[in-house]
Amino acid sequence: MFTPPAAYTLVATDLDGTLLRSDDTVSPRSRAALARAASAGARHLIVTGRPVPGIRALLTDLGYDGLVVCGQGAQLYDAGAARMLGSVTLGRELADAALGKIEAEVGQVFAAVDQDGTDGRTLTEPGYLMPHPSLPAQRAGRRQDLWTAPVIKVLIRHPELTDDELAAAARGAVGDLASVTMAGPGTVELAPYGVDKGTGVSRAAELLDRDPAGAVAFGDMPNDLPMFRLCGHTVAMADAHAELRAEADEITLSHEEDGVAVVLERLFG
Image 1 (tube, helix red, strand yellow):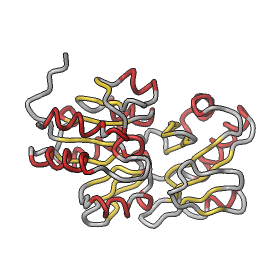
Image 2 (cartoon, helix red, strand yellow; image 1 turned 135 degrees about the vertical axis):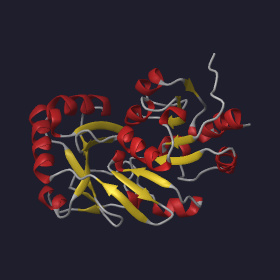
Image 3 (cartoon, helix red, strand yellow; image 1 turned 90 degrees about the vertical axis):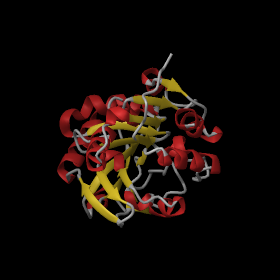
Image 4 (cartoon, one colour; image 1 turned 120 degrees about the horizontal axis):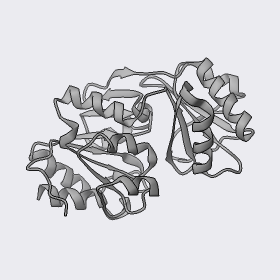
């Protein structure tokens, strides 16, 4: 039976499929549970695959003014100061080479990119369908137009392969050109090599003067695995990917059932 430490000092939460409900809102119960954790001295750290422009309005709605790990760890953002603290980009030549190797293995894929910066755009080439219609994206005329500005990651989709199949094939094809992860349904991504949610949490925890060993982390997809392997206690949502469930310390209810709040109420109640 799991015995919690005397005090957690950090609560790291993914957003989509974890803290957010399907309508991109955080329930009153989850807000109250996070406030309870904060009153006990624990800092809340949002850790998301979304780039900074895709979460700024949400952060304002939440009244969140802490650090945010964005873009699968490629960006570290200070919400209170509205300032980027650091970012890592994926070079055009590396991205082109990685896409070429993937297409040599599985045939044509459709790509999109998240640009760097607090005002960076999400650009999609013809044929790429955004997995989250609520996230803004602009259509590029051709693949070459995806590289008009530095990017933090490339998103890929295949017309026939499942997400797991595409992620596995991409990982085998690109080697050390990029890091490959699956962040959600229809969301296989290429990030700068060696960059992931774990590296992002590590840097954020250092700035917050918190030890990740004293963190409780919540997630639902394989892109949360690097964060799970860093944090002291890990919680997968009820409908999480099987790969994440297998490594989690416990399973909670789904994001629609306030699974994050259920655990926080127990740990900080």
